[in-house]
Length: 85
Image 1: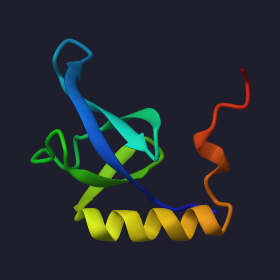
Image 2 (image 1 turned 120 degrees about the vertical axis):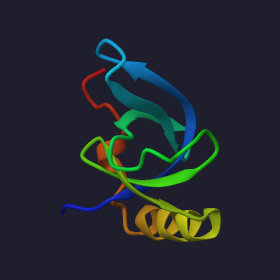
Image 3 (image 1 turned 60 degrees about the vertical axis):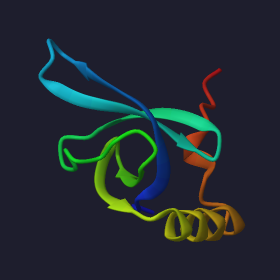
Image 4 (image 1 turned 135 degrees about the vertical axis):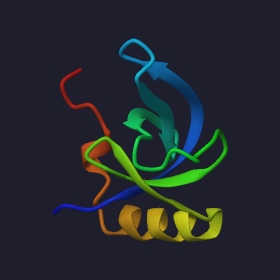
């Protein structure tokens, strides 16, 4: 299933010679990197919807928590965990 997962931005840095704005995003305690190129106004502490490593929109905290709870209940969060370790 393709869907966007809500997460909270923990840190922001510019990568690839300063050309790409990237964030460390927490998904219920699991930290992944995501591009912020589609939401350039996103900042540390904001919640964003992330799809295939790209933040596609900002959302408020209540909405993010509600969606994350639904995904957890449905068992749709397995892809966040690195199973290759």
